[in-house]
Length: 103
Image 1 (cartoon, rainbow, N blue to C red):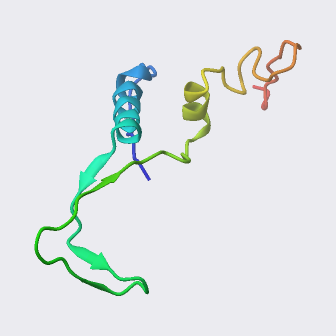
Image 2 (image 1 turned 45 degrees about the vertical axis):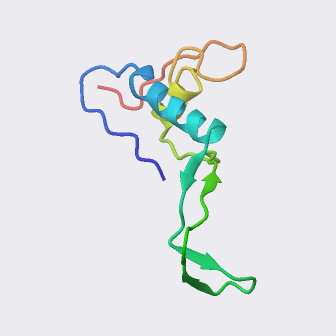
């Protein structure tokens, strides 16, 4: 899991401030990969033993499969307004605010 961060302020942050660098690094891992040298080798049945001599280098590529977001962050990632907005759903009807408690 990648923890992006917490934001405590009166206004929302610019989402691109921290998502663009993360997206660029994830794209680089997918396109170019990462070269690793394992400390152990594995035989055909899964037993591992220390690498001797010149260990082989392997190129590993990564892709982000899923993410976990709360509702406000999900709306920012999907570039949509929240469920409490004037047009919060995907239908054509304009929403209305209904107070929960009368004062």
